[in-house]
Image (cartoon, one colour):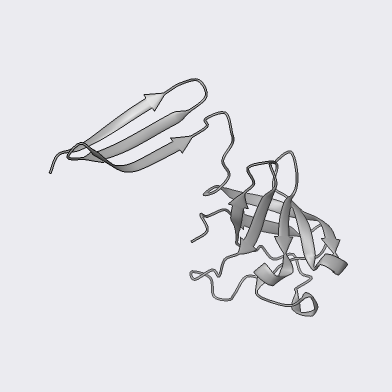
Length: 133
């Protein structure tokens, strides 16, 4: 079997094709001018808690705050910690239309306890952006 990788780069797109015996097996495309945040790790700060929506907006240094729904924190609003502990989270998506990044928490296997979500304005949230599976 002959496998080839073909790469095409233009100012507006990056295209990578993998062929097997002359037939297209895989095709990847990307717009390089669009920022990707999936896979990045950020330390963020909770800016606003929306009790009615069971959600929070987290400042991770982007133009707009990231959105974190409490159902993705693996606990209810009443159980959410109010201490200043860090929290590992990951995004569920990079929005195509805007720079909004949706987040969800990740269970920290290497930590001695599960992460908690700080609800204080001065509290910080550690953001770990991973590809949704």
